[in-house]
Amino acid sequence: MEVSGKVAIVTGAARGIGRATALALATEGARAVVLADVRATLSQETAKLVRTAGAEALVLETDVAEADALRQLFSETEERFGGLHILHNNAGIGEGTTPWPEVSTERAGAIVDVNLRGVILGTQLALEPMRRSGGGAIVNTASGAAFTPLPPQAVYAATKAGIVNFTRSCKPLEDSHGVRVSCVCPGLVATEMVQETGTGGPAGWLQPIIDALEMLSTDDIAASVLELIRDPKSAGEVVTVANAPRVPAQ
Image 1: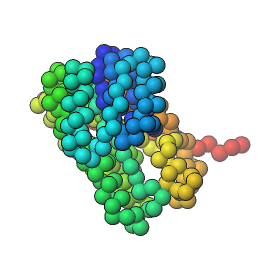
Image 2 (image 1 turned 90 degrees about the vertical axis):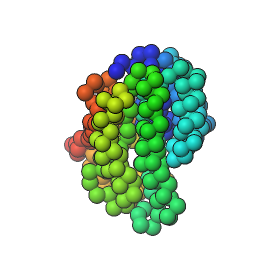
Image 3 (image 1 turned 90 degrees about the horizontal axis):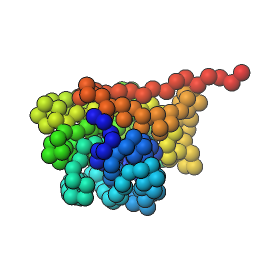
Image 4 (image 1 turned 180 degrees about the horizontal axis):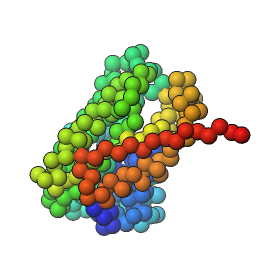
């Protein structure tokens, strides 16, 4: 699917990978980008960048863990712009500064609700608007943590593994609804979430990993999202964007 002239929704658009993808969509000619996030003020900053890049921008304060909030998101998008063609299910949270298993049960539940429930419901509720628009492309953000144990972020890793298998299980939606569902699995990305694993910076458990790998940029991941949107064979595909080993200083 070509991005030019299309209407897109990006969840978790206030910062990080979501902001980079929203800007990339606008730069590639999207007609409108709807920015869905619980942080409306930060999303307005993203909106300014999207408009500067030439697309319409609409900020909708949205908790992706709430089905009614997602229904409102899709309804307002379709009413305002006349359709929906692209969805990036990107919103996500981790354990933060309190690792598993000390993380509170409330936070653990919120991780499951935002990361996995949000992707499942977002995909389900996007199908009819996309079918009415002639088909669409959905890209889910998982993580390299889906494929390897990550003890301090066990709940986060579990949700990302769930997204991977959910995506693969959605391959038949291309035939039934004209919607391609795919998934990007970033490695370690230079985002605010990394900084928020510890107090005032990365957690101690994460620092050796950072020292060993070249950090990916949010633009690296946005580029992969756009590739999946364009690729007519991406239904059910799971693409990993891996880190290169850090070259020691001479």
